[in-house]
Length: 300
Length: 284
Image 1 (tube, each protein chain N blue to C red):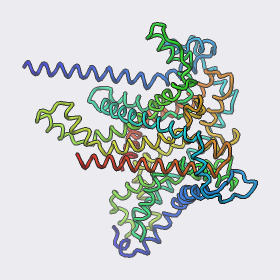
Image 2: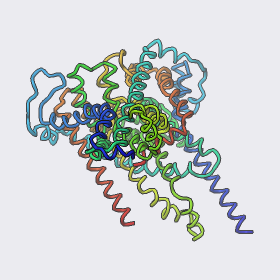
Image 3: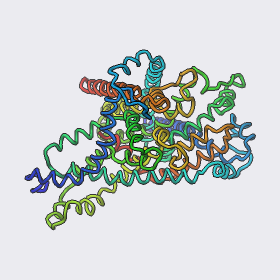
Image 4: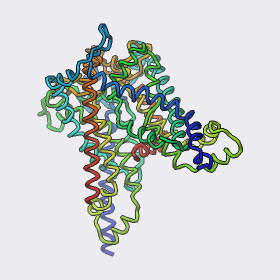
């Protein structure tokens, strides 16, 4: 570092301030203030458009949550979504990364094809897949063909059992390319010499995968699992576009509930309480995941 | 000799399996996008409905751009496109400046509380936008910001992840050139603009791409803060268009294609950079 930067701390701050002000002021105003105010608002009965001034109502909003069956349902739904999408998408992404990392001609071309859905806006993806899931759509047509006409068309998005799996498949299709690219970077950072040494020692490719690839990718996996989980928890666009949370709340998510309460019904106080719980769950899960994955690393 | 031949044979088989998998997966990722394009080119709605469940949907009976014209007749598509491009362009442009400046301030100067500030930025990365959406809505509504461009731009300029990516870049960046300029009497602001920023092109590209993708697809926020076509961006316009009955799938797919194909073309061109951007977002 330049000498007079490190020797004079006050002058360092004076110089830094001009650089820091715009970015930090924006972060404080549009992230920290709303984040802190979510906690405060959650103890009031604030409404979006206020006719009467908001009142402090203590823990009422939190008590109300326990009686709110719709919220309970949305929590169960989102855990279901996360429990399916996160492991499937993570393993799928790793598989794709290994495949496009092979030294075969055209691998780059396929890598490009696999990430195209990730640059397609979720709203557009939802529209296309609504068409695919139509009772007369391509999925029903395909099933009809491979069962030689013995398929009863399913209205996937209006079917209680099928609607959520249908949205899960679509979400994985859209998102997996991103994790594939992260895994690909992880794979390429593993030193080639490790594999060479293993080959000389006579380890087959399955053993090399289990004892070199997977352990070397542990921090990548930590990142992929945590970021996919957080993304999955935020589920909103797809269900809003495709089912509106139905049929019979089968696809109703926490974010949809926060949107409905805070925006549609204008119960900002209650929606803020939901937001606080939502954040604490996301935080709790990412801390737990980090601890578990770290522990595994220490054992291994 | 025998062993060598069998190794060649297994190599060939494993290559063959790789290709079969690559191609099947290629179809899996491409068919919805191809379906969007072929449907958008079919001007006959009845033929679309007749064919939608079969492979013939991929080969339209007639090909025309009629559906694309319909979109413009039924909606101010050009206005939505302008809104999206303007909002995203402004956010990303100012975002690069604000985030890189703050990162530079944290990376290049020593002062009390610097470490705490860096930790704060890292901590902020955990907060998903959804966890502040409702209080931010309340705040901006009280300020009378609803239904405007700035309500869709200003809150999204500064971002802890992008700031941190710049910070990491500046920390690992040799300062010799900047020190030399300092000895020549240049001010820090000048050094930042004339030396540091021009040398940061790789990280600027990475951050701009990630920021662009996030803003371009944004849906929940503009759904809440825009009312009419004046300030509405493309994703919300798509939702409105999709909600109009009877659903004319040809028109809907034309809308979807116009929103998607330019971005896909851009990312195919910039794919090397995109792959690097995503990889960087994963390095923590």
